[in-house]
Structures are given as structure tokens and as C-alpha cells.
Length: 205
Image (cartoon, rainbow, N blue to C red):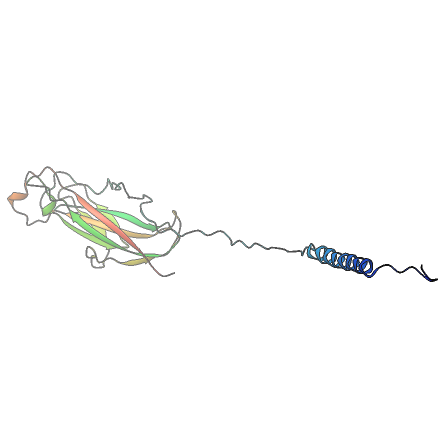
């Protein structure tokens, strides 16, 4: 028999309601935390590239010809049927057609391919900054018109700044002679050649 007043649920029912309420509160907290974890943060990126890079060139030309890998033939530096005391002279223009300055060296060699070769009897002289003149009557004579001493083979080393194909460059006069004192053994030779090698080495700007 119950007395007047509110009906009170059994203690176990109250505990059940409290437990469900606590679970619901925890779930709400979890949901709130989960929503906060999905926030995103902005970001940005910058990329830097350098300008173009190129390399310079070192280029020596002779009479505006490369001469490498195929030798340049200086057709005016020739004389056939040479007799003692005769000579021929020709000028080559050495130019710097690259982008960096260089020093250069000229080395002259004569051929020596056997008993028919006139090369070992020939002499070669070189002069800087000279013109060349040649006579056509006996004795045919080539002259480098300069008052300076000849430059020794392998010792010429002058500076040429970078320029263009049209620049004057440096004149190198080459004189090839059969000395007047050669003996009879120099007669009847059917071959002979002179090679002029020019080597350029980069110089400081």
C-alpha cells in the first residue's frame, strides 16, 4: 500500500538513467573533438629558378679559317724547283673569334719522310706584325718586311683579346728558305712541307 507523494523509481532505474546521460555527454564531447580535428590549415609554396647559363668559347682562327680538325692550306706558302738561296714568304692573320682572351704560340716544323724529302734542308723564320713580299725572277726571294728579329719556333706568345671575324688580329709572316750553302745532296727532292701549328691558351680577362 503506497502513501501519498511522487512515485520514486527504484535505485537501479535511476542509476541506469544517470549512466545513459553520462554516456551521451561523453559522446557529445567526442563529437565536438572530432569536429575540431577536421579543421584544415592553409599553405603556400614559392619556386625560384635562376637565369640562363652559358659557357664561353676559346677559338683561334687563321685567315678566318678554323684549321681544326682539318689543316688550313696556305696555298701562297709554296715554292717548287727551289735552288740554293731561294725563299718564299707569306702572312697569316691570327684572330681571336671566341669570347675569352688567350695567348698563342706558333711552332713551325718541316717534313722528314725519307730520302726524297726536301724538308730537312729547309729553314723557317717567323715575324710578328709584318707584311710579305716575293720576287719572281732568279733568285726568287721572299721577304718579311720588318726590322725586328725573327720569333723562334715555339716561343711566340702574345695576347689576343676576344673579337670578331672581321678584326685585324695579329699578322704573322712566315719565310721558308733553302739556304745558299746546301750541298748537292739537296738536289732532286720531290717532296717537302712546312707545318705551322698555332696553340691558344686561355688568359685572364
